[in-house]
Image 1: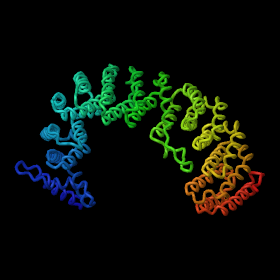
Image 2: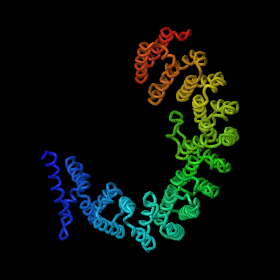
Image 3: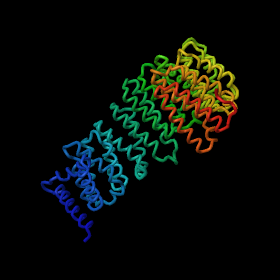
Image 4: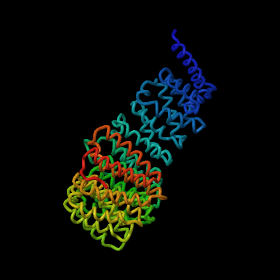
Length: 592
């Protein structure tokens, strides 16, 4: 006999001793089996290795005995052991495993599962119990399960009602259970109506909402596509009642479940779409509600937009209202000093952050003509107000809208660009910075048309800002915008403006504003990177050895700015660019 066979035989003997002790008819000793189960989660590798080896052997060679032992743990007085037993059954005992069990084992396991269910022995890991019951039912060998669950739903125990509904949810998600569920569909319709409309327990209502959504998502309805339409009215009423009751947690739970449905089955809402959209928009503007609830309503609306933009495009009034609300949310910013300002989100409120994200999606997914016409009218109005938050929001929104307006934005650049350039000289620093950032982003999404049409006025405006010696943060932003403008423009623009831009860039670095300002030094390192990205294609035209030499020199130079070696940096960089002009011979203009 081989060494492996001897080892397997010894482990089988050890396993049999453990299982036999646990399954004695009189005075069973579960402790060795409990130790084995607990060691599966041990922090000691040797214990985990032993436990996993024995558990795997039991699944392969002693499946019935293992099932019976685990069924006994389902009624253990120790919650952790009950939870671990349910977890192992849920993870390892799939439909295929249940089909291998003897009839007597199945009967014992059924009894143990229903006992644990009926006696509400699980508080935390109840999902594992439900998963096991669902997989067991999918074998077709548990016809008495549904009648038992129907009794639980009709009982006076809210816990049993909730548990039964959550099992229905699991069954709906299991393809092998569909035939049985469809056979009892009229019963389920009555259950969902009663629980959503008349039940006093919010836990039961939410469980019924969850289960009914799973039925909509997973139960096939080819013969009757409208069979679940009655549920939508009940679902919306459940949400409305939760809001009116003042229960934030139940309102949020309801919304999250509806969001899940909107993502997978947006057409379910089509017959009452206008009412659904109206309800959600009313939630977003209701100042008496918590911010999280209002945001969840917006998330629901965006889920519909993303899942079925054609359906939403048929509701132009809704689109206008949603856009206006998102713009209003962009007004909600918390002021910080200019040096701390970033266009990205760390200083913005949660309203501001969500609105930015949604505006981009709206412009990309929906009819850009409809969006853009609304945008132009609103932007012209907001940029003329005396409220800086509104002017700032407009400039933040312009590049977001431009992402999805690849036809309308180029046609209307003569209206949009002057608004942005005028805002570069706005009296409020945040508006100035937002305008500069808008130029930077348009340089990318509208290139090279933007550069070809507006290079002179844009670069003149930005170079003026680069000379604002008392406002280094503004200089950094303007320099970054210039480099993006140059990088994404064509070669003629790069060559024509290279001398001017380099002069302003080196003057800014040489001025020493970044010394003592770590955040500006980091930004300046980024500007160096952007500057060389502008020239990247030209460097690549050099021979390989010259390009490698140049890359090594650039790495050294970048480190020097981090160490405040400003003068050395400027001198070395100018020398490097002279080397570039001469050795690569790609430009007749030498830098002075």
